[in-house]
Length: 443
Image (cartoon, rainbow, N blue to C red; front, side, top):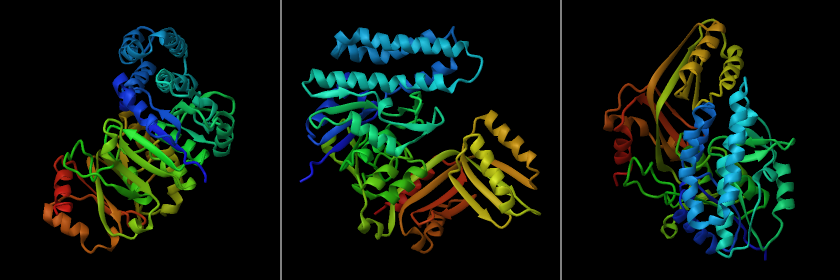
């Protein structure tokens, strides 16, 4: 019988302190099937690294002090013998920053190396703590495993290369391998990143590559809730959810997993468990390929995104097919990924996240250059989505909800492609999520 193997990913809050790391270690000890551990940077570190990139030769020392305030207490309390090795990593970071600050152009290659620091340090520390606890573990630089190409900041994984690298570097069945998430390398062995929050994605790619039975995502909440528990404290944990529902949740902004995480585990047939590092016995949510869940109609969860923009493009004398390629190319140029695209005969509507003012002005200038008949931006909107199955088969779902709650000034209403979601765009309303939750889950 084939041995069960799993990948465990621990998020930033799970490795933020030595007390939290010890809880992670207990989870690893109590799960003999864990083969690979993937860790995020300590909570707050990546934000500071982004500040470093924006800083200059005169201001970066203060940010370095803040980084030390996060990392040093962990090392001093549990790994005092490793202080010199950690300081060596900091010295390398400082050298990268100084090179960046004297560069006269946007150097994404240097930026990717700077941003990788958090995961590299975190993985090194985690592995050392495991070894001190008597666990047979090995730290593997993620850049040896995760191969990708394209942008230095948001690269695309090379799946076959990753599988080959796992066979080469993760081959000892008696060892637990520890690596940082989020980072990898291209075929020239230059550091690349998988996009912000990409540690989940790294773990999923490893799970696919080693054909793992389970991917554990350990975070600071005990599973996926009916709504964000930070906003709706009484929302209940969803004990089991199917992949389609999870994909819809993520696409509408639920901060559950990195958006690309589920595709590798769908391909490999790997189950996913989301649980709390701080209360592992509380259970969590299993994301599974379960046809019974697919066939069950009804709302499972609610999401909400604020600071949304509705971009409308109206056409009088031109066909949408004539201008669509230019519009999508323009959005891609500025890294704008629409949350929703709605089309009618003579109108394009996009819902997008709030833009930096410079980016928004650039988009407007480029749209003007396309000589469109008319376009407009509406700001400060809220996008609410109901997630479930067969929502398009439930008569008057939105009308009943709208009438019951007095929802007015709706800008856009629609269903997801498979009826897994019903979304509506309204004027910003901080009370709407709670009211929708109470109405949907009142029983």
